[in-house]
Length: 296
Image (cartoon, helix red, strand yellow):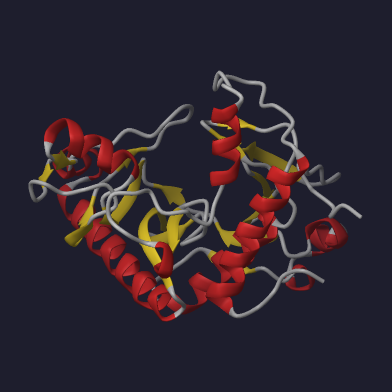
């Protein structure tokens, strides 16, 4: 029997604030309710069908990391039974995929830490020998480990891809002291996450974080160190010169390339085997990092 999938979230009686590629946000007075669906986007296009357990993995893995990183964060609770009455009315639809959070004023930048040369960083390096203006060793290969982790901010695009920017450009946007604090926090979180992942046989190649202000304090928001915001590799599968398999939507991207998808909406219906393999990857990431299994 196919696993249930949640790609939409309508909560009668609650004030809907916004929809993202994956998340639905509702106003709960002094707090926000973030509901993580099973939707999946690839090449910035949302697919027609969802991935079983994906939303639960992203939600509960963020909960796991918020609880162990030791930095100010926006999470209040992921337990529906601890949420306000108007939320508890929808408990069956929300369990494991909802997070009640503090309201924050987000900074208009993505904070990216990279420990390995992959993705858009590799593309930048091939063109310029740098990533976000940071010079890297000559002769570096695809997936090379960097001499030390680097901070490479990006614009926060409302549609399409985020674009890498220099630290100086970021500082002009948010101010020098704030930019320095965000850089230092991002690198510290990355290094803590990478060290923990290594104990589980995983490599954390890079990660994207978001921060905002809560009562004037810089606070970690959105999701953290999930397969959607971070690139994890199995240590046993890593070597320089290749793009190691990652715990995310790789099977979906490979399928879309094989059918010459034009990378424009609407997204196609994904075959069952692609959906199942992708779901297993997300579940594997959760199990390896937390030691728990989300499946009933």
